[in-house]
Length: 224
Image 1 (cartoon, helix red, strand yellow):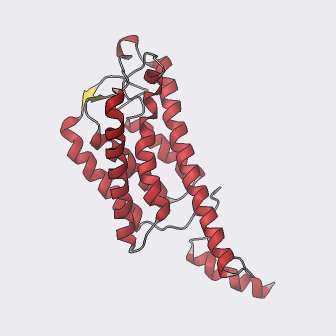
Image 2 (tube, rainbow, N blue to C red):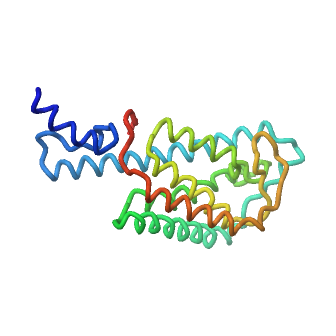
Image 3 (cartoon, helix red, strand yellow):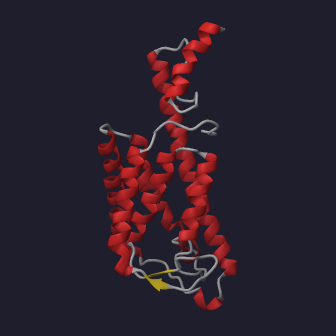
């Protein structure tokens, strides 16, 4: 028992108290690699599920709480969707590469996660896609991203993932044009945030750098 505890302790100290990143006591290097890959896949899926579910939740809430006069959202013209989504993906990939550059090594999880979350933000257009009246961009709000990051901090408990989510959110805002309800679902008063697009892009880059500097290991108690 003493020998086992001595072998666990260094890994536990290195990961900030979590043994999720510690290699199996008697496992091979290949087994450890598969373990880490499996964990990273779970992190990616969990982050996408949490983020996407929150987008849909805010969209659903907005359908019932938004005044009729604010339900003027229309779906983007179909011909413009591919180029718009491609731009979102490219910006997300750029931010993912920035995270890897800060870490001096590729981080495939965040490299793929950031563009995925950038695109998932547009799920709040679904009602318009199905021909339903809806408020404009109900999940493009500060309240949305605060609640989403708080939920990730509770469920996933990885600081780099939380910061990457913030980077993806502001990256999306920097690409979009038009009006936003920055305090939905509390208020659906629309503001033209076009003059802040450069600031949003800068915020996306700053959060990407912060994600690269953040400790990569899961904190103790993470479900993934």
